[in-house]
Length: 440
Image (cartoon, rainbow, N blue to C red):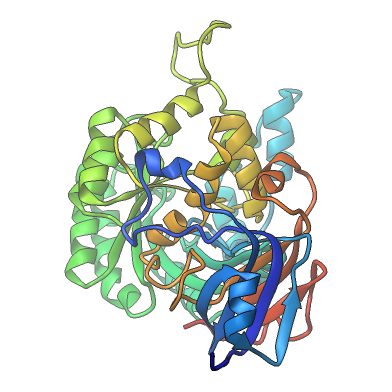
């Protein structure tokens, strides 16, 4: 048999999990199926996966100048993180201490508006330096693709500034820009909501030149169904794809809005009703759950009046995860990295929390963090699994099986990161060339 030339081979993995599935995403009972190849291997050609199989099969068919011995390692796809607020100024750690201890009042200028003020005060250089440092941390922990929203400008000039900086980021982690004009209502617009909506719509043509997505917050504490629908339809008319912050603080019909707009994804969904989840499943809208928010905001139980749990009752968020799966939705997991409700950049932490807080199985979690997460960014045709033709975004773990990556927590268990067929992290450390890549 004639040998084929490859750019790189990864061989002798203790276990290789392709996380393969339909480009539309993995649903229902299929979420509990996860192929695991013992003594697994893969071949990379021109930055793409050429073939996946056993080491004996790959080594009998391919030769390459670079062969990585993955003995004792788990090999998996790199993570896709479909919800973040990457560019921001300031921190909210003092506010958090006050909130969780109750020993002092939460600062009156706390919350999103505090972050807005700190972001406006920060220079472009400071925002970019922080973003690059955060991207480095994400890359070391296994994330190769990240969605990043605006939303901390709350007025046109500042929002366009954040969008310009996001779209211009140069990093190995590919950043997908999202314009979030409806985050919260800015101060001073309490009796001028229609004016603010009109301003957001007027900015859309400019935003559409830089952003892939338009996001809206449909929630009782943010914006109404009608307001979000008006902005979402205007964005769709310009060719933008839609994302939705949905029903985080109460049922604001955010899930139904996402289905109506045929949004790529709707995230949070803490109080989404069953009709909304079923409508999302029919529309092909991904339901993205955020266990880091659940933990950080201490939201393991319902917050509605009179809904205190009795010992025999199940926790609230596991019920949401199960309802979303049972509704037939494509379910994914993400960090929602931001300074307030979830300051973790680690998708490993998300996996580990999803098991502990949502009672999801190892297989479900892996499928939700890889192929389904890529589907949430409309990229499942190109990444999110180790399949021929897809981007060679690959992780080598310091544990031998996929279950241990979730069972063990509190440390970084990714040893090697390969992005588009290039090793960018080795032995858990960034290589000097790791920030040379250009987002495409």
